[in-house]
Image 1: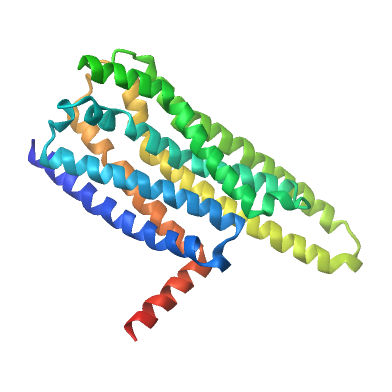
Image 2 (image 1 turned 180 degrees about the vertical axis):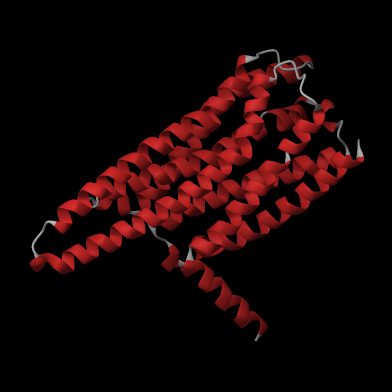
Amino acid sequence: MSDALRVVLIVQIVIFSIVILLLSIYFLPILLIRRFHTSNNILVGNFCLTGIICAIYWLTNKSIHLLNPIIFEKSITMCLYFTFMPQIVNCSVVHSLVMIIINRCFSIIYSNKNLFKKLVWSLLSSIVQWIVSVVLSIPFFLTSYQTCLYNNRLQVPWIYYYVLLINVIVPSIINIVFNSIIFFFVRSSTRRVLMTATITSSIKDINSQQHSRDLNLLKHISFIFIVFIIGWGPFYIVLAIDGKRTIQPWIYLLLQILPVISAAIQTLDLFMYNREVRQYLQQQFFNFFQ
């Protein structure tokens, strides 16, 4: 193993360890404290959970590559762990973000429907997201199992295009479509509110504040989504176009840094956005040292 690769692996291990710690700190109040059990927080908490699982996998992956890189050749189970698990954990993260965007669209358009504001709906949406992630990953599992069983390189070139499709292209299209729907709906709704009589000024203020909160959340989730795509998109694109693995290894080495930076930015953004959770954590921190 080259010194450059060893340094990159060590940096990745350190950053993923920090990401796991911070996401866990953010996730626990949402899980344990009742006042944080809102529909938005449940969906964001599901994103944190997928992020924790994803970071734990990549932490163990990079640690094994650093300490014993040939262990995956010793059994089919370890081989599948290195070939299939990256797909399902990354797919879960990106589709948890997609589920938040879809739910925000429904809650904004059908704001008079309590169904989309209930915790049960958020929990159901999270379960559906996990099912979708597993189902979409089945083709990759089958090809990975064949690769590990016969101990050779993946012989299905189209599978990396499929992975690019379900992890980058389709989620990006869904994000653009639902964000566009929300944008045009809120703009048309704002115009209707402005045309109403002044007697309904209090209702206008409430609607305006609600739309403002919805759009702020939408911008926040869209930013996290874009960061994820920037982090993982180049890696998946190179995997798809480089079927014969002719691209220089140092390029793959550089591409491995982007997902780590992406995970760090997403984690920090969560703390910056949710002021209520951040203030709670700050209060607990100061109380602990008093």
